[in-house]
Length: 341
Image 1: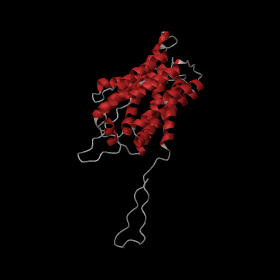
Image 2: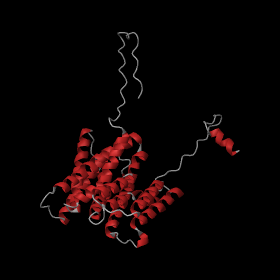
Image 3: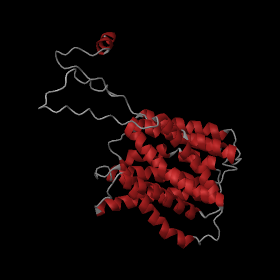
Image 4: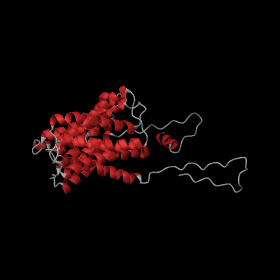
């Protein structure tokens, strides 16, 4: 923060009004590292909350409740910031597709998956999203060509998936339909991210507006589907109800606001690193609070998955700028050229 302006020793002339002090730079009240840790905990515990929610409600009902609570939080935030909804019908069409792939479909798949698989495994499957994104970007994003390191990361990551599933044992003890739904949910996230990048990047609407609108449309989608496949609950058990509300208000609403602020303050590279903490927290929560069993290959495979995901997100360093004719080389550039002669 810049130092405040010093007042002159003598008062200014009466005909010249004093200059107003420079506006203070607003800093968040809470350090970004603390908010980063809170975001990691919220998203890490989301898989435990899904598990508890499905003990009292059908998977579609868990997803609908989650979206309702999350939409309410973002609606309040948008109202406080006086954000305007998109006006273009084309934009709303793209938002509808994004809501399906980023909210309605993956949220429902994770809820159904956790009927038969532990929350720890669901959290690890979620960590494969960067791997799917890397594989899809080769086809869908011509400007995002893979490097050898990123391709190696893709191979390492899927080797980690096979380790988690115990492929050498013939996948014995693994519920393949449930695991497949969790992996499909992670794949759906990758499809949605690429779709948003191609269609909604230049609309002029803020990230908060697009996300809030997306959650609203996802809520409508689940409101149509849920009555068709489920019946209204007879009771509202306390713990599952609280879990669904926390999953939506915290994991879908507050978490989006935290991530939105982190990306603005420290950039998307640091902001997306939260992905690597989610499976660790999900595993710890599932084992300690739900008593889920953990064999050696699950944490080992998770580490391999995260290593592969980190490699797929790496970018080549920018080449050193050549000095203009007559310009002295920057510090270090001259030494590097001399070392090569």
